[in-house]
Image 1 (cartoon, rainbow, N blue to C red):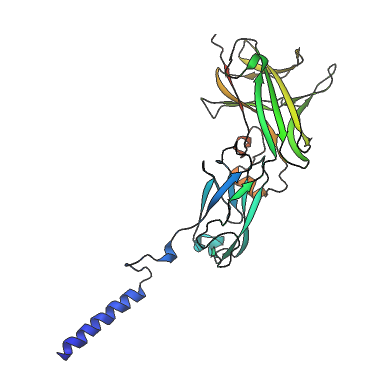
Image 2 (image 1 turned 30 degrees about the horizontal axis):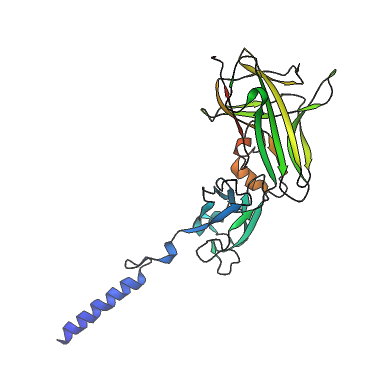
Length: 314
């Protein structure tokens, strides 16, 4: 009888030893293996703009993502052994929220050995932002195709496209934008806006940049507080399926560009000084983000684009 009791005690002790020595307990979830992630919601001061496509980026980790239609985001934090050459990050790092025509914001996230620190000002223990982020709008950008080029109008041969971009300041301080300006050569005087983009809706990879190849400068333009400005563009579609820029009905001899029949989204090249935006953030989206023919289409921005239909078959 005694030997049986000793045997049962031995078996019980062995089971307890096995259970306590397991790194992953089979009977309940181990918190240490749960996925660590930063989550939260970003909204915009202009309720007319949708909350999607706001860029969210965590410095040092160089992790970026975009918000969904509700402004929600999620950034999965890799395990400590996959950070900083296996050392795990230690310190305070900024989590940025960026749209180029909105004021950039950031919050501090603290890490210790690659994990969320126990003392945080901006997230709870599960990595969720304590407060909703509200980005303030700097500039509204609305493009219209007017006169002979009304939205959804079908163009014939030798038609003129007149484009007006309306810029409206939404802030109480003066700031700069960058755009393309083309000086006119003798005997003409003055300057015209250029750098207009026709983005095919049927073929998103087909983006025609209407831009003079030489003598064209990126210039700074001051936008005063709560003011409104207009940028004007004028182009002629030739019967040879080319498009060229004109001004005041006087033909300016620009290089012409091939254009195919189809429906296009129309918008201008407008960029903003990026002094407050880390270079690493910009490069995480594209290594030549501000270049009109390379990465510009990837800039996170909210604007109202015009839609036109070009038809060479009628």
